[in-house]
Length: 196
Image (cartoon, rainbow, N blue to C red; front, side, top):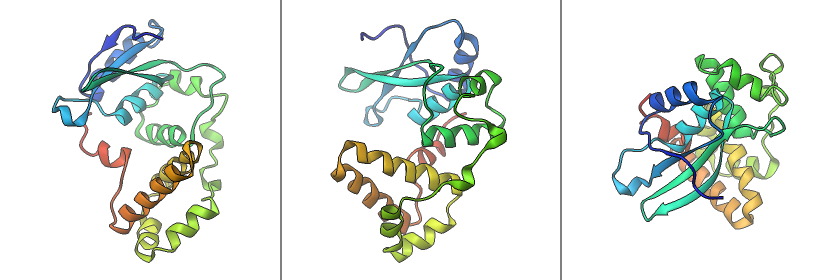
């Protein structure tokens, strides 16, 4: 698939505004992202996904443009598409913030009903739990992290298994290292610096 119509946006407010005006008019848009080391202003991936979820859109293909930029395709979510644990946590957060629109909720109604939320039933896979507990500092800090952050990070680590055991172990090891230092990683850390 070739890159179609592109859009370069540097903050979530403008991206949300574009989505609110185009979610039911455009079949897709390719957001341009500059790499962090380019020095160019950029919307974070997490910020882009959060706003897309609000309007029933989803991210998919990534295409390189040049050495410092790439384009990522965003389009309306298919009625049969699943909802990853990470996106489920994002949706829960958006609902709490009052940002989720009816359109966004309708797009995932076949896989998620806020009135029947079962977030309390989330269990940490035994191998991941064992690894965290083996590091006393990491385990102590982990228990004090917000439940939604715990679920997002565990779901991400678990998803790395699809890419091979070495990638999974690397993700788990990095998470434990940062948790032992009482540091958040990933989308939560990046979001703190983002313009809304």
